[in-house]
Amino acid sequence: VRDGLSQSAPIVALESTVITHGLPFPDNLSTASKMEEVVRNNKAIPATIGIIDGIIHIGMSKNELEILASKNRTLTKISRRDLPYVMSKKMSGGTTVSATMILAHKAGVPIFATGGIGGVHREGENTMDVSADLYELARTPLTVVSAGVKSILDIDRTLEYLETLGVCVASFGPSKDFPAFFTPKSGFFAACHVSNPKEAAELIDSRDKLELDSGLLLAVPISEEFYEDGLETESVIEEALNDAKANGVKGKDVTPFVLNRVRELSDGASLRANIGLLMNNAKVASQIAVNLNNLKNRSGGTGSSRVLQNSCKSIDKKSCFGRPVVVGGSVLDIHVKALEDVKMDGRTLAGQVGSTAGGVGRNLADGMSRLELNPFFISAVGVQEHSQALLSKMRHMDISGIKLVPDSRTGVCIINIDQYGECLYVIGDMDIHDRITRDLVEEHKEVISKAPLLIMDGNIPLETMDYLLKICGENNVPIWFEPTDLSKAHRPFLSSTLWKSALSYATPNMNELRIMYNTIFDKNVPLSSGVREHLNVTLEEALELGKPLLDGSFHTLVVTLGAHGVLVISNLQSTSFLVGKLTSQKGELRATYYPSLKTNSIVSVSGAGDCFASGMIGGILRGLTVRHQTH
Image 1 (cartoon, one colour):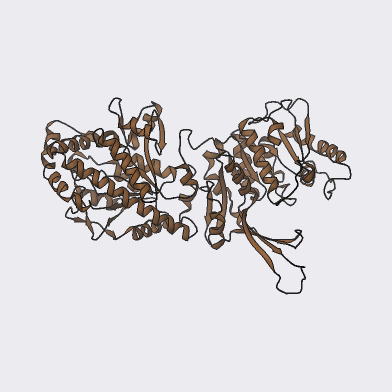
Image 2 (tube, rainbow, N blue to C red):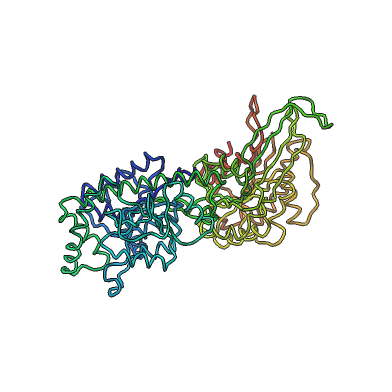
């Protein structure tokens, strides 16, 4: 599921109360496994949702499904209201429609297949017994695929109530008839109608583009092969309801009691019909998910910035928090190389043109993703043809924090190279970086405040930088600053002294270090082209410029020296990096020079510094020694 989310693959959520409370053992386990198989066979990824020992699972292994199917342990029926209690008490159970909707939405899964939703109970006008499923549909923007409303309920009042709540209800298939769970017709009609998965996907996409906060209910009639079982089941429902009333069954216990009694009275017909409609709903939901995924890809991503920017895109045993966060630019690099002498006289030259994903922040997040550090990446791209090209090269990454900005151009950098491999000039269209705003970053405040490390490139606006410095300083989150280039190396130090409480690491080259020093201490150290005549002179200058920064705030400076290697300067006597702010700024300065490794062939140096920084960051997060990680 995590891989599917990072690659924007179609995923279908499945609930677990059907396992814990809906079906008897071993039918519950076999049905859960078969539903997942149906989803896979229709080219989507199943994500069965449940809670085991207080831990939320989005996607389950075979062993975890067996735990929920077991009748040898106490399992809770978990609705929205029960989530915090079940988690705090380390309990286990199956999630109802409402709880599954919440968790699926937080995980970034847009479609959910179930049997039937809850609704207004019969005599609900007197008892006020209304399922939490209806309220959840009104406030969680998720699509629920079901066989309508359970027929033991008051379907008429349920549809009226959904209308009052503003929930879009659409029948799926040949007619507008609203199904009655076990039978294809309830005698009532849905307000909307879609004929096939493609139309359903278009309906969902329109809802997303409007950024409505309400869900969408797609009612799918039971398949034809189970009609007779469904009719036989309907004939005993009244008797089962009367038995529930006679036994004083109330609240959330009514549905499992009635369904179990119906199963007994129908001599297995209800079980067959129930399993049949579950399989059919899983199939339809998967087909819709695939069509929706194709539609989003063609339009350059989701039409809803809220869905794309969800800050809790994947929930696993370790939670979605505690991930390193990267904030920075995403750019499509277009390389143009001439294959003959370049003459600036308007002629057409033979050449080669290719494109790669670039941008300093994106490069860092890419490298960290390949090192399995699971970074959360915050950036912005426009909505046009270049965005599709760029995002298609990032399928291996979690791109849920990237905002698609309508009417804006994706960052593009055109690099023109002569036939000898030398860069002639670069044209950059980088206005999109201004859309990495404070508001965008603030949407992910909770993820940032729990991060072990935040990586920030120099492309983002000053207001955004100041906000990150402030929030990270308040939450003791260390920041790794990547200066990006000479025109941006000074930016965190311009408007305030916030950097002193948050900046811990930086990877400047020598000129960027000189600019940082000049900005902070109001000096005018001249810049130089490359390393000075003698390497030792450059190393001594780096130490001289770096020491005041380390005394003032920084934990470690990694000064890159191009082909000569790097100089790592730290004010700790320890041989390893630490994640976290220094408790003391006393102690001896430690500086170690690491010459570059020799190689016989160089494919490209583009992005080499960002790849190196990703490796260093990996060393910090994994507690490796400076020496091991630098090498």
